[in-house]
Image (cartoon, rainbow, N blue to C red; front, side):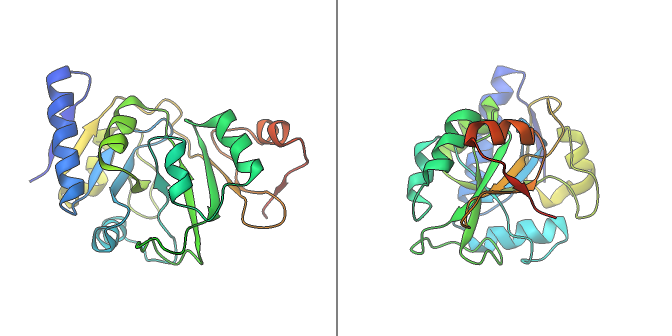
Length: 216
């Protein structure tokens, strides 16, 4: 049975975070607020839970699940190396609406989908999300919606789409941006913006000091 917790009420927030942490550790799914849109998430290192997540959304492993982290330093243990350009973007936009695609460390025991040796990482600017991430560690998190339908901007919108497939819903109020993150791919010789979203392209170019291309 699914439970929704109102995180604007302190007692509900504490109970909800405890329930969400327990769900993640036991391989179940949770819905959590972020600064962009609501996300559906699980333990990033639990391959079975990631499969459940993809099934709940109605999509396959050809669209890998991004990973949310609770601190700048967490990324160091997840990737082969953190390039200078990645450090600059992290310092400028994390926590916030910027996702980075990097080569993940080959030793990691995870299966996020057909990633081709890469992972997409972000640190969200939302206190509820950060508290959960700092408790349970990196989470595989995708937008909380059925594939092909609009991303959820509230916990209720997520519930309406995902229902009992998710055990715990954390209601952190309406998403401030209600727009997906900007994605910058740093796996090639030059940075490429795969999607322009919450962080404007002009801001990315200003931080990097180059004319960053946009994927077509």
